[in-house]
Amino acid sequence: MAKLSNTINIENRRAKFDYQFLDTLVAGLVLKGTEIKSIREGKAGLSDSYCYFRNDELFVKNLHISEYTDASFYQHEALRERKLLLSRQELNKLLRKVKDQGLTVIPTRLFINDKGFAKMEIALAKGKKEFDKRDDIKKRDIEREMNRKF
Image (spheres, rainbow, N blue to C red):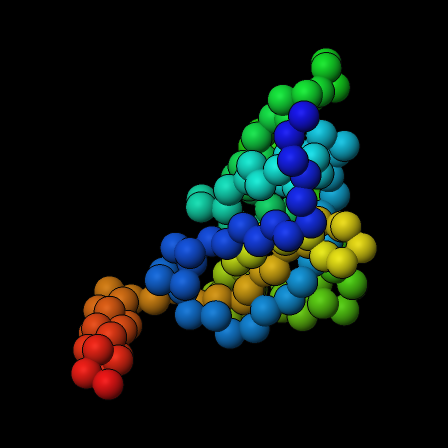
């Protein structure tokens, strides 16, 4: 039997490099039974996932949750769309900003909260241009050099 843990913290590291975060929210996920078990084993990936609106509801696509090995025939699809749970007020705010300002919603972190529920941290983000990425790399290199000297 695999070791299940409540200290799961799966991050989307690429998102910090490609996007500038403007606002972050924590949303619940609608999951099946075998999906939560796979997440507790740490077998999930956020690398190519993104969020989109359909009928005024927010969904996450390309969130990869591996199949649970100890399950019988009640298995889930690894890349299925999953609904995110937010309040109507938060959904309306996000939808308005996505439509008006051309921003996007991306998942940044998947974790298990204190009560044992899977939660996803999502960010309202603006895509970085190539020169912004170069500036970030330059700042990081300068900071690293300064830390080495002291």
